[in-house]
Amino acid sequence: MPSHPTRRTFIAASLVAPAALPAIDALTIDDPERIRLIQRREYLHSEIAKLDRRWALAYAKLPLWCRPGPKYRDQDGRMFGGTVGWPDAGLNSIELDTGVYLARPSIRDIFELRRADRWLMAYDESEKLFVCRLRKLVSRLREKRRVERAAELPRSSAWLALEIELEAIEAAISV
Image (tube, rainbow, N blue to C red; front, side):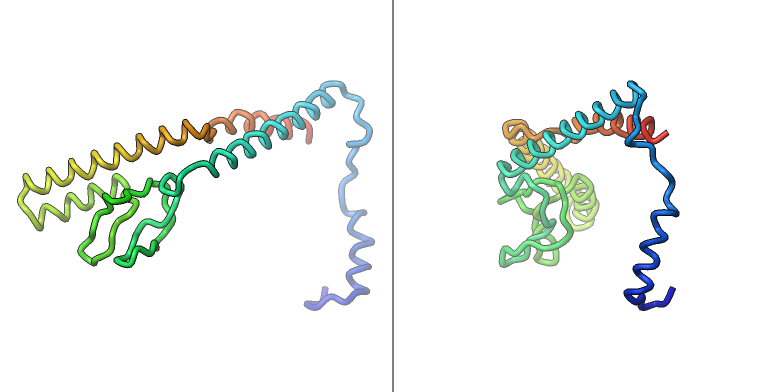
C-alpha cells in the first residue's frame, strides 16, 4: 500500500476487510450458560462503573495535601518534581542543602537523609532528627488514611475481585 493512501485504495481496502474477519455467532446465542455469563458480565461492568463514580466523588472531597502531587517546593513556594502519592508535609517540609524543600518525603527519603546527616552532625543529633522526621511522616500517613476513610474513598482492592471475575467471564464467552 502506498505511504499516502488515496481515497480509492482506502475504499478498496475497506471492502475487503470484512471478509478477512472471522465469522462471529454472537447473534445466535442458544446456550443458557453463555447468556447467563453475558448478563453477569454486564452486571460487573455496572458495578465497576459505580465504584469509579464513587471513587471520583470521594477523591474530589480530599484536601490537596492528601492527593498525589509534586515532590519538591522551591523557596518561592512553587511545587515541582515528579508526582508522588506521599502526603504533603505542610509546615514540616524538610529543607535540603540546595535550598529546595522536600514537600512530600517518603520513608526512603527519610532514611537517605539520615545517612547524609550522619556525615554532617553528631550521631545522637542525627538519630533524634531521623526519629522526629519519621514520626511526623507516620503521623501524616495516619491522618491521610483517616481523611480517606471519612471521605469514603474506595480501596483499589474493591475493584480487584470484580475485574478478576470479569476477565474469567470474558474468556469463557470468547471460547
